[in-house]
Image (tube, rainbow, N blue to C red; front, side, top):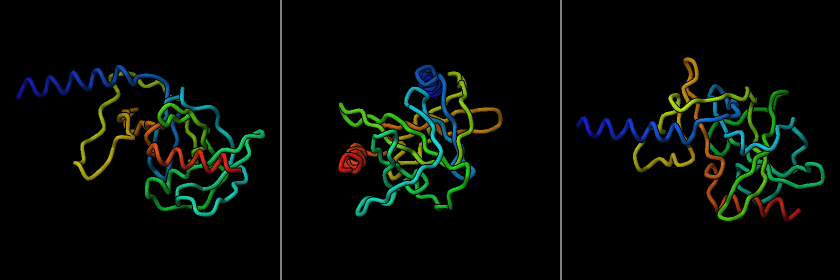
Length: 174
């Protein structure tokens, strides 16, 4: 029993070490999330988003960002949250996501960007285990900041490889 607890602590320590760093934090409803700052290209205000027929519900559409068309994913819809009206704080985080050997840009629609936080290794724990029925592979870890917990997301796994490629196809078809 003690060896099992020691093994879990060692795993959590090595996980924290590998994930420690700077994260852009943002909100969806009352929940706070973080993306590794190295995956973030820029943060932009809400632009006109062109809907694309026959795309998954979580694909809000495409935007023209300085001559480049990129797809915008609504994280609320992807996570099965209730959708809300856009506000003045709604923004798009432009990220680099990797699908296999391809790196692609996509926009991630969020309710509000908070700040860039430096999260140390001791403040990151593995994602909770919910059993086999719930996929948590897109959660890098749980960051403890003050009295709050934020989910650190793996932008490369928020969408499956097939979903990422489909999103990239939507943008490249324009």
